[in-house]
Image (tube, rainbow, N blue to C red):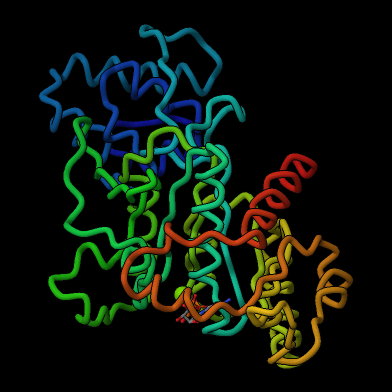
Length: 344
Ligand SMILES: Nc1ncnc2c1ncn2[C@@H]1O[C@H](COP(=O)(O)OP(=O)(O)OP(=O)(O)O)[C@@H](O)[C@H]1O
Ligand SMILES: [Mg+2]
């Protein structure tokens, strides 16, 4: 792109290349078109949509060029609403962020309890008074909405975004499930469509102010989780594993993927680590813990060592995950918050 902005340039390209222009768009009353992710209109088309006169369009273009050259502009450049419409990476400072931390939950292997850990971590954080959202990044195999028992379809929010559904405990949730007519309907989408849905879940949803947005990733280290990781401004990753050699080997793939994407591993969670009988006897059903090994492999702390609890299955299946309470999850949430404090 040349260093002159013209009216026929696509807004997305302009704001991606010159983040400072977001404020000019906003100053001129083009809030939705300053959406770097969603908007594919040209500056002129955006102005037309908002019924601006050709003179006003000229002024916008003039100001866009002024701001990239460090010259004064004709409008007070308002701050862009970070958290919806503008990716976090474009925020000026941490203080500008409406969503303070975007954390992805990942596992190399399916079925180790990623979604469950995401859900229960959200519940514990919420109990501690944090403002929490859960973005179900598993577009083709969504499970978060069911776990929380959120019913109905998301509505339009007053400022034109999508209103997330809110759980009984006050956790904001967005999941592909909410858009399916029947929960059992398959979502047979390929990578690019999944990617654009994820971006919309992030940018077009009115998350409001959040301390944590937890993103439940699809299983594996292939295309699907990669798409999500690259579509969102993820601040850190929590890796979920279970105590099996195979799982350890697969965790290494996870770690390598995060490293390749230059991401930060916040910590590791060992799920299904043991089963405790009512008399307090512990059985390591899936083999001895490999927590220490995980710590040395990742260089990140072991945030949680979670037991197998059969009551969880019933609660999750009936949408009552928020009724669950166990010390191990409160500890997990505490460690998570403290680790992020240190890393920041
Ligand atoms: N600690 C646990 N105790 C009892 N049941 C558990 C535990 N962890 C997970 N489960 C159960 O195991 C099943 C798989 O868990 P979950 O869906 O969270 O895994 P996942 O890693 O998200 O799977 P996928 O890779 O398919 O997304 C669920 O039925 C869940 O309720
Ligand atoms: Mg899952």
